[in-house]
Length: 169
Length: 169
Image (cartoon, rainbow over the protein chains, first blue to last red):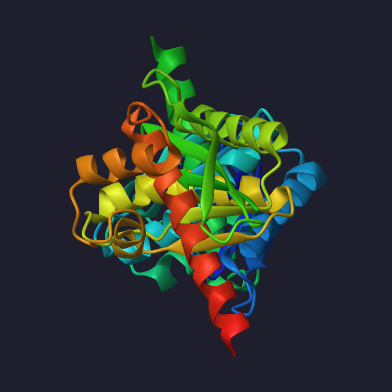
């Protein structure tokens, strides 16, 4: 299974692609690639939204994931930030849907506990564990790409748990 | 000048197309068409976003506006609603940008005062005045389409004011 995780942001949207080797009993995670869509301030909102769609389509076409995973939005942000984030998130979901790919959503607590084993872990702990789980020397940069990889790992761990539960029935 | 106004909503997104006859000194407004994109609850969010893009593209291709006008978002809504609205609004802006059309944004107060002459007018007053200004027997339905026509009228009135101001220099 190949998962592309997306971490949406108003300025930077990270993405990260992880393969799960399903032949081994012990989960084997392979980092295939990661990157970030940086939206320049001088661009208008419509131009930035076009860029999000274009760069996500390029990533989806380059890496051919089986599924896309995205973070559920944390509602403690204010309404103005939520609207801005929503605009980017809507276009990201559209770009994925245009490719006919399924999308799985995970709550921030679930992502952290899936990667660090602790739902209230600090951002740095998540980035450290992403590097460790993927066998990388350093946490991927920018942090948004590491967060996107964490979302991919969360999907793989969840899918594996579900699969084990199903086999156990 | 032909304007397509969009009134974004999580469940219904209205649109309305108005022509301004620029040859006459007294502003002549002609209602060309209006409609609403109704997003069914049984659809997933990605499916709904695909529908928004598809129906807006169909409207833009059918009516060939010169410019698109949209409401600036009112931040008194809560963060959860703002995120949901943002997702639809982001896709609407993207759909317009894909067609290479310019987008003008207007604050709700500006739209109401441009149509009713009073920024704090009730929704019903706006709908009544939209029908009156466009020479329609009844306010267009659904209300979201009437609101979208109000946004188009606001753009035409603003453009006419700007044009008069420029000639006056």
